Image (cartoon, rainbow, N blue to C red; front, side, top):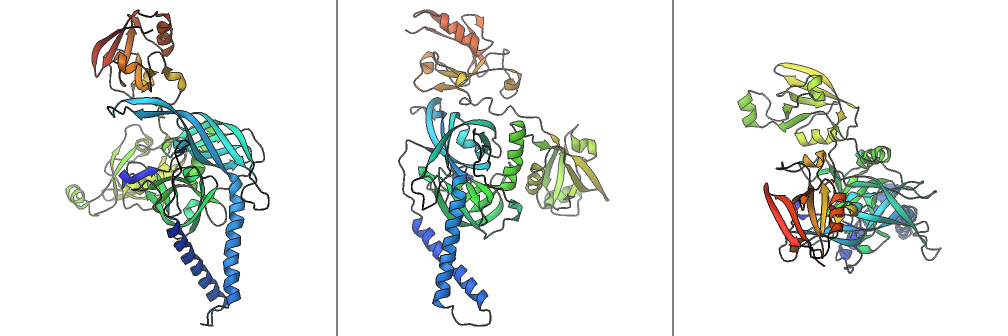
Amino acid sequence: MEDNIKMAIRRPLSKEVSVCSCASVRRVFLIIMVCSAVLGAAQKSAPQSPAPPEKGAVRHSLLSLDEDLQALAERIGPSVVTIEVTGLTTVEDPNTRQTNYIAKEQELGSGIIVDPTGYILTNNHVVEHASSISVLVYRRRNKPDIGLEDAEHFPATLVGRDSLTDLALLKVTADGLPALPLADSDKVHVGQLALAFGSPLGLDNTVTLGVISSTQRQLNGAAPVVYLQTDAAINPGNSGGPLVDIEGEVIGMNTMIASQSGGSEGVGFSIPSNTIRLVYEQLREHGHVRRGAIGIIARDINPPLAGGLGIKQQSGVILEDVLPGSSADKSGLHPGDIVLTVDGKSFPEPRALSVLLFQKKVGDLALFKVQRGSEVMTVKVPVTERERDPESILDPTQSAGNIVPKLGIVGVQITESVAQLIPSTRLPGGILVTALTAGGNASLFGLQPGDILHALNRTPLDSLDTLRKLLSYLKPGDPVVFSIERGGQLNYIAFNNPE
């Protein structure tokens, strides 16, 4: 299924708009849903009479549903913003389909106003490559008696982003914005009505209706992130828009779809509002997520494992490892402990346990009830802050300041934190080539992504500024010799400085 999972991503402004082929299906679904509501209302109003409801009662129910949906759209619409992004992205060499090039792009996404003072949530993948962000706010949206909508343009700053949950927080300078409240997504149930708002395929101010198809849907077993699944139509451009309940509260953020055609096939996924709230609070306070950890590695118990270890139970969760020096180790958990409950909840497999721990904040306690041999014990384990990954430090499009136009490369200085992310090198330091810029001369010079530039004409390269300064001294026709490292082998690249 993962091959068919696609981000409901921000839509490039330059592409043509395609027509959704699912309108007739949604129309049939809406008719069925409305009819069910009408029958339910009729049965409720006349529980002792099998006779069909009167014509006037049916008409009243339909009009009531229509009026409720209209009022909901009027209330939610002004809180949903359109996000315009200008930035850099990677593209493939059309000849080799291997080398990454960097090109400029303009794209479109959606966002949710969550604070009247200008805080706006969206998906990380909408803004991760942005060099500039603009937000369009429609305070007078979906009100039929006011005529044309008036959009206010605000430049936005990126407060912080979290790639694991695919959430980002923006800030605009404004007051009195119409903010939406976040609901408790743990109370969302299968079959519940849901409305998706956003700008699918560039069609801003779009509303689609559906139901919650599943809760706690985990798409990647290696990642402890769960989603709400809905059949409300979600398409590229919906990313960052809200999924709301009939009370008008945000229960999720539209993020991705499962599709073989590239369009909506009724299998969309939204980040639950409880996850949104947790990440939002930390991004607003710290600019990044202080993610907790306790230092355990768990796996499921199966019959062969149980037989080999002499365990009576044939299912459940066992600790494969407890990392030395971790909070779990210091609290008294051991490898081989069988997890009976955590915080009073039992777990049939380790993925559910990882989801619970993922939702813990730094400083929280996790109450483990474990079995060790014939003994059952309770262990309180504090959640400590995980060592923060140097997120996106190798992202070639993260900063335009990493581009070296004269060479046509995107480079990153190899610091201690970068060195931890790449294979060991023959020489310390240098400049790592992370990508090539579209239309640049790097490939003509013989440079490739992954090359490490150690020296230019025998002068060591300790920073991008040093590289740029040395290049600026060169005259047309001067010899240029780079001492590079490629795949663990030292090489020279020599050419004459072009005109």
